[in-house]
Structure formats: C-alpha cells, structure tokens
Length: 369
Image 1 (cartoon, rainbow, N blue to C red):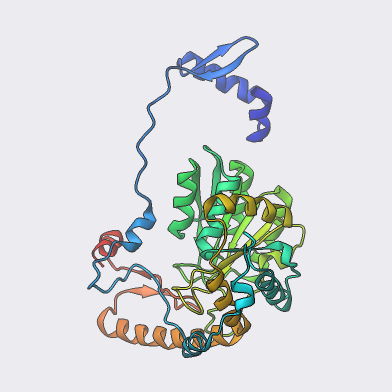
Image 2: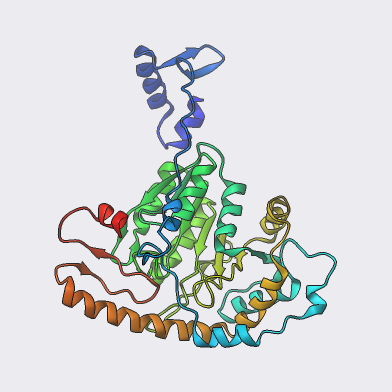
C-alpha cells in the first residue's frame, strides 16, 4: 500500500505514487482502484534450492588436511576432566528431561554470565545441541520468506544457510579494521527494516576482528532503538591472546533484544555438541516448544559432562588461548618464510588468520585447499 511503503522507505507518499505510475506505464505493475497495486504477470517458477555454503565444510577427503574449518585442540585440562568425569546418575536416570535443559546446567550457565557482568536467570537459558542449533532455532522462529537478515559481509555459513532455508536473504554489512562498520549497520537497519541481525563481534570468525567498546555499546543502542533482535555469537570470545574478553552485548543495555549464543565446542571439546542461548524468557519458552518438535531435548550424558567443563570454563579458556597463541606465532613464522608477500593483521584472539593474497583468486585457492 502507498502509505505503508512510504513509511517503510522513509519517503513521501507522492514519491511512491509517482514511482507506481512509472511502473504502471512500463506494465510492470497493475493498479486496481480500491484493490491496490500488484506485480504484473504470472508468478515465476520456484528456483531449485541451492546447496548451502556450509556443505563445503564437511566435504574433505578423509586422508587430507582440511584447511577450511577451524577445529580447536582439546586442552590437556579438558582431556583430564573428560577422563575423570563421573555422571550423576540421579540426573541421568530421570524419566523425562526438560527440552530447555537440565535445571542444574541452566543455573550454572546463568551463574557464569552473572559472574561476567550480565545479569541472567535460569529461565533465560535454553540448552541446545551446539551453538548452530541455537542459531537455527532463532532463525526458524523469527524469519519468514522474503525477510531481510543483516550480518557481517564475511560471516559463518551457518547463519546464511539457515536464513536461506527459511526463504530469507542475508544482507552483508561492511567491515573495517576493527570489525563491523556500525554506521553502515544503522543505515542498513533504517533502510532495509531487517527482522534480525546476526553478529560475531568478538574475535570474529574468520577475520579475527574485535569490535571496540564504543561500537559494541552502539550496536546495543541500535537494537533497542529499532526493536530489531540481535544474535550475538560468542563461541570464540573467550579465546583471547591478550586476556581481554569483552562483555556481552546484552550487558551493554538490558532493554535491548540481544540473544547470546555460545557453546563448549571452541574452548573445551569440539566433539561435545553442547551449546546454549541466553534470551528473553518469553522467547526461550517459545523455542522450548519448537525444540520438542526437532529433537525433544539435549542429550543428558552430554549435559552432565558439560557441567564439569563449564565449572572450569575460565581455566579451559585460558589454556585454549595459550595453545592457539603459540600456534599463531608458529603460523606467522612459517608465513614469513614461505609466503612473505601475503598480508594480514594478526588477530588478538579466535582460531583463524585472515590473509590477503598478493594476486589470483582467493576463492579458487580455498577450493583447492
């Protein structure tokens, strides 16, 4: 409708009327008095679904070294905790489990956030099979066909593929040396009216950038101002080479609709698919119901092992950070020796180094690698 479109794109109604008139002259739309303006012609056949970008992450030949994924090594402390683990059978043998997760685990995760400066209750926690399931549950609940989702212009395929399966479109927001361009984010929020923003602001995968404090606060302000939910992916936030672990976006402004996604996979054990979502309790209850249709609940033995690991989260993160800081130094040494014309900014955390090739196609090289 003319008034609705004028409001949505922030122009006058006269501009919309003129634009519709031009489209009608070109027979691209049909205008019916009292009925509205519609696209002319018959609907195009639905295009076949394209393979997701994420499929390439698991297509390597078993006997090759896969350079496309970032899979961390389990710290020695993690190996010891896993070997010493003795599951609480009183919890493991319960006749049924809560789709939102074991109450004792939800409370432990909430306490971890409270200790980090983000007030959290157990009712705000939904335990999932990894962070990817948490992202998918949110996307399935909030994204409809035709909707726009904003993300960094270079981002994790788990976001783009999930949105694509829902019929939505991911619009990339430009990035700079410190990560997301917050001015460009605000412009995109005002112009495109997204239903969701998905960000990885702390040691971003794969560029390794860390969003500065002022920019993080501005993102929270924009979420509150526009009422647009933000998924904050923090799976590698704790892998910090200089010891700096920024607070959550949710702590910046309590009234901002920020959902925090995290897991144990990047700092404890990649094979243990235990993640969680911190969100508004109303959304958690909604996703709890959707969860029952997907897989009913998260594996109880996995949740019990996660209790031991999360209890030592600070130590495991520090150990993981030391391991990968040393590997970064080795990688820099080898690149200086073998690839001196490649350029990069050394990351301050995370699992990846984002390099620029002096020539040729990076996409072609990635396919070969």
